[in-house]
Image (cartoon, rainbow, N blue to C red; front, side, top):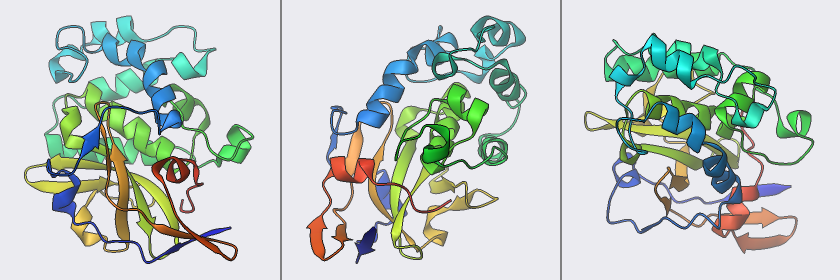
Length: 244
């Protein structure tokens, strides 16, 4: 059993601070690396006119929905569920702030299912196709929200999947952070509404990542039985999330 000791609080503004060193080498994060390897077909279908990093909402027409979906979704990991694209196409006329709320509400309605139940392993990061088919745990909610907002045209540089240290559970939790209009918003499967990151002082950012880079914000001290260690990024990547 791992217990988190004295995490360092990271302010919302610093989460997107360019002075924090980032890296595009995802070898320390094999779960995320595998998602990115398996996602290009899904992302590129909606990015044909705008490159791999952003999606214009105008591209999510009914024709694109039909062309981008995968009729046979027997392979959940590489599936592009038509229901996902149909949902996103219906959100294109909303404001950016309303799109955050819509995506958060849509994903949070999916069932929370532990990786042990879905995959018979301690940790597994799902693509949106797998998440829609099976439900998932906190990082799977964050991943589905991330790629949903990418398809709606949010730039990757304004989105981060963030692994947080949670002082209330003394464990780790994954959320999606979105920078919009000067505020960092949290899309959290444990909260019904999108809220400002600054309103959740129990969270301290450990690391964050998007399609382009990853950033280390703090090295938490973790207690494993009677031995105290400083968690390296690879260790944090493989720690089970302790919060729904």
